[in-house]
Image (tube, rainbow over all chains, first blue to last red; front, side, top):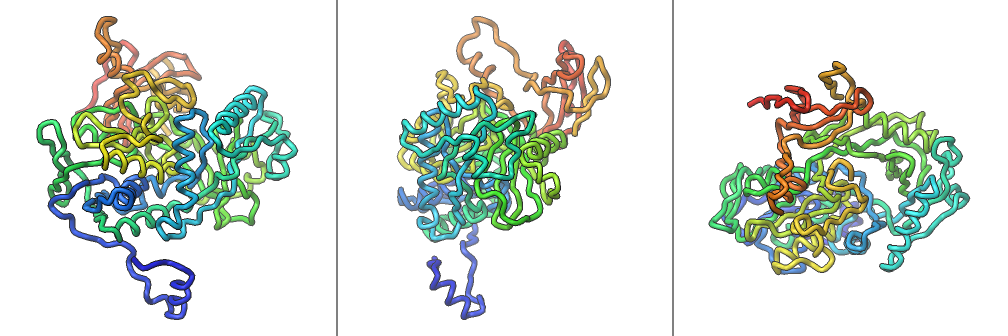
Length: 417
Length: 90
């Protein structure tokens, strides 16, 4: 792997940029591997990189149905934060945020990690009290946050209509270490670094069946032939139920679509990530100037990577209520990604009823920020057979045992999380 | 945008309805045991294709209806009352 640095850039600039090569290999799949990871998204590539670096397991293939970077890792709104309420969730996402802080050095790739701050607004006494409780839970775990009054919020985000009649802004809850990361670079950075360590990234290779020998997994059937493996990982959030069905079990989740939007580019107006507590709306401004925003899931089972108009209307109206000036902007792009929505709103990183078959999924709408730690705990589970301490509570057994991690307290209704 | 034909009110906009989940799930008998209740509360087929599901006409007559909808094309094949058993296409 060619090391990227300022010196590399200057050398190439003097060379009219003729020396940039492909950054990862495109191998034919071998007949057998130590481990196969199904899904070349953020979590699959991160798992492969952690297997190769932390655990020295390099006889690994990542099988991707299409091209890496075109699934959910390239469809999210690029936010990273760790401001969760439940200690199990907070500890995990805080571990992930710490890994984001060193991600670019780890994989030697510029991912434009920008810790610009994540601001959650509140609009009622009850909401303030809950945010205060959430902030205190985080402080007990040693994570940063600040509680802002209305004047401090207005200094930070002067463009909001803090006195709107419907949901006046009372204050905000700020995590300065939260922010954004360029999502394409996350897929490319992990792919390049994993490939350099010997991981085969096989694109256009769709898994069509799961091979079993007795109680254990033996490999997968793909559109490019059967590939045997000692261990198999499903990292296909959005389609986890389909892969599980091939292996003969069911999962506690449903597939739902979440939409996202980008406006035309404007001059810098917003330098934090902001969420609106009065409706489902969150927004940040990209380095190109476009406002990147989204809202709630559409709310019914779907595998279609496109959303419906009622949610478009709801998100845009919430945005216009909070920031009236956005009414004059045009939306350039709008898209959807399909996600595993679990029965408790928390992820699944777990062994499965089939021996040597593991699952990384159920990320709901929080999968992007979890990529570094998600790969870390999945690789640990695959390599050692035991759950990693920061992910031990994400096992499938929690549902049957009544130990669900229900951040919102919404109950076993995936569309309500 | 879905247009859902409520058996009582006729064809209405999706925004009038509230989704209430997989209608193929049956509540087990009281003495069916932990495994049966675990499967009924938590596990789902989550099909990529035809899905039998509950909707409530929340902004209309407030009744529950059964809808057979395709989870990729969003086509609706059949709609019934709660006691009906609308057919799922092959």
